[in-house]
Image 1 (cartoon, one colour):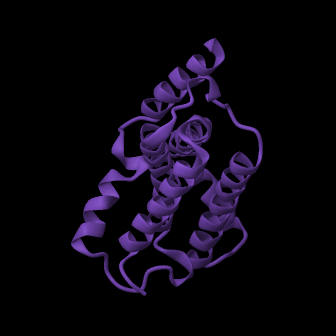
Image 2: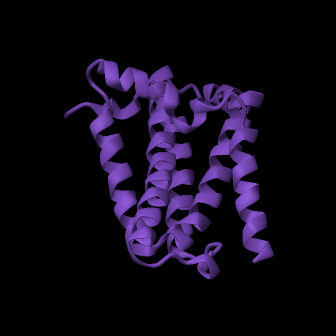
Length: 177
């Protein structure tokens, strides 16, 4: 398997193309949801709640590798369900501000790339945090991969509120219009 950052970039590009097709007005609704989920996950980490959940898993006499696999699997399943439901269900639609033409294409591409970054970055963060369970990564990270770890959604800001503020502003703008 190649470097993990190739997978990261691939997911970002795929979601960028999805965004260009769906349009920025629809993708912004998903961005709100993803920013709130990233903030909630970061808030849980800041409070040490994930460590408490892992302590509960230790009671089950799982070996250390299995605890990491279980924790990663639970977070991944919940996050995957959120992603699928947000793309399949109704989201906050900014259709009154719908952009047309090439500008709309570029806006959709950009917002879709943001969503891809939030999705792929969240999975990568938790894969790294739980020591790449299930053999997700067999070799060392490349220098680019090590650099990108500092720019994942959960690590780019020192506090969860940095994701809540733009999501809330977008939500207020949606409600006003």
